[in-house]
Length: 197
Image 1 (spheres, helix red, strand yellow):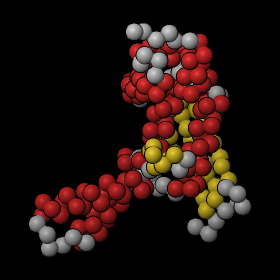
Image 2 (image 1 turned 90 degrees about the horizontal axis):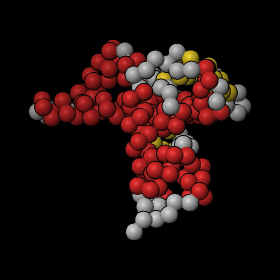
Image 3 (image 1 turned 180 degrees about the horizontal axis):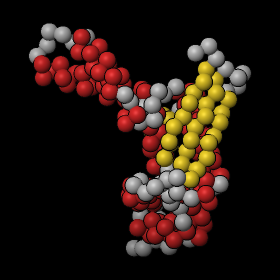
Image 4 (image 1 turned 45 degrees about the vertical axis):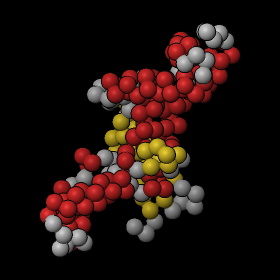
C-alpha cells in the first residue's frame, strides 16, 4: 500500500530540514510518509553529500565577532565557505555567530587536532603516563591514548560538544550546514579574549 504524499507534508519536512522540495518528496515516498524516517533519510544523504564537499577549497567567508554580555569575553572567528553568495546567507552568518558563542562559552584552545603543537601532546602524554605507572606497558599505552582522546574533546573546537546542543559535536553542526548550504565550510581560526588573561 502506497501512501499519498501531500504538499503539506512536503512543506512541513522542508521547514524542519531546509532540504529541497524534490528531496523532501523523495524522502517521504521512500519512508512511506513517515516524517521521522524521512528526516533520517535526508540526514544520511546530506552527510554523504557533505563528505564529498569537504575536500573542496573554501576561500570565501567572513570574520565574525562576538562580545559576551558584560564585555568580559570576546571572540573573533574566521569561517570560510566556497562562494561569496553563501557567505552572505542568513544561515551561514547564524552559524558563524553560534560558533563564536561556542568559543566564548567552551574556551577551546585549537580548531582541530592538526593545530595542536607536538610539544603540547608530548607534555600531556607524559603527565598521563606518570599517573598510571606500575602497570604493563600495553595497558599504559591504551590508558594514555584514552586520556589523549579525552583531551582532544576538551581542547579541539571541532570535537567539543556544541554548547547549544551537547548531543552534537561542533563538527556535526558544521557538517549539517554543509549538507544544507551545499558548500564546504571550514573554521579557519579564532581568537578568544578574556579580561585578565
